[in-house]
Length: 202
Image: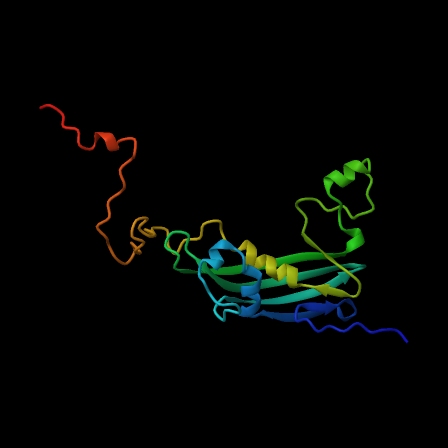
């Protein structure tokens, strides 16, 4: 008696069920788990399983051509990280049109180094740099979780800002200079400290 594959994870699709259209919802708990460890996310100090981490929704058409599976459709969502200047929450919006190819692992294109080692010969499929995003799948199941996780991770810029003119925190007393002022003065350059009390002749 043959075993029938079962799908329990919310982002997995059975190859035998394709073609199909399906809506995938990404809850805040998954967004929080995927972004944990990123400096601008951890700076918020949110608890594990943060219900305000973010959310995502994809409406995808999945179809196959031989062993290749294609996923096409819109992905919208948002996430929260810390401003790189004042550490206040920043909402980042995601609005992407996904177009992805899934290939069996044995068909994934080899790295250039591996191809050179094989004298340019490879059994993998040829995929140019301008082609679709490519992900592997194994067996009878296509797992979309890495695709969705990538959308959130890539949405976080190196230095997110709450606004372009954010004044940040005072480096001396730590107050948020967007909402209050302080009497702190810029520190004197130590190279000029010896000149501080010097009186020049009239």
